[in-house]
Image (cartoon, rainbow, N blue to C red; front, side):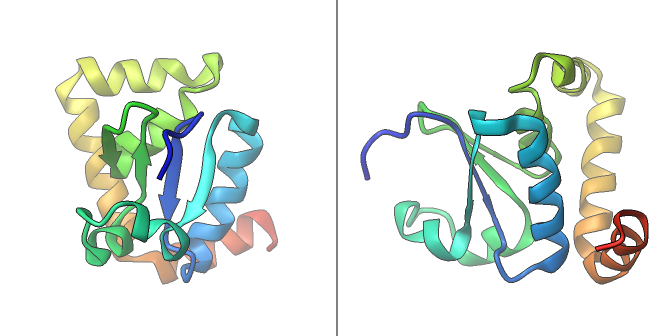
Length: 124
């Protein structure tokens, strides 16, 4: 794989909840982030087990470093200046970090429930 030109958000392409939220995030970040289902990207990252891709989103930076979960979401959104404050809070306030990851993990564990809520809110 050649060096990417922009960060890459890798997500579960079999997850309808994930697909809807990737659309929302793509509208915020524009062309700053490449969004790719793990089903297409996993072969580029053989060191990351499929189970990890299924459990959480991954953000792979241009330099190859990667983050997962809430930090990955906030990292992608921070590509827009107006969203950077959230990543700053995550990086500097341990309580915000704990709450963010806890919320992310709760939602990830209950995707079907939150899919129903998302569909009601966004009428998808």
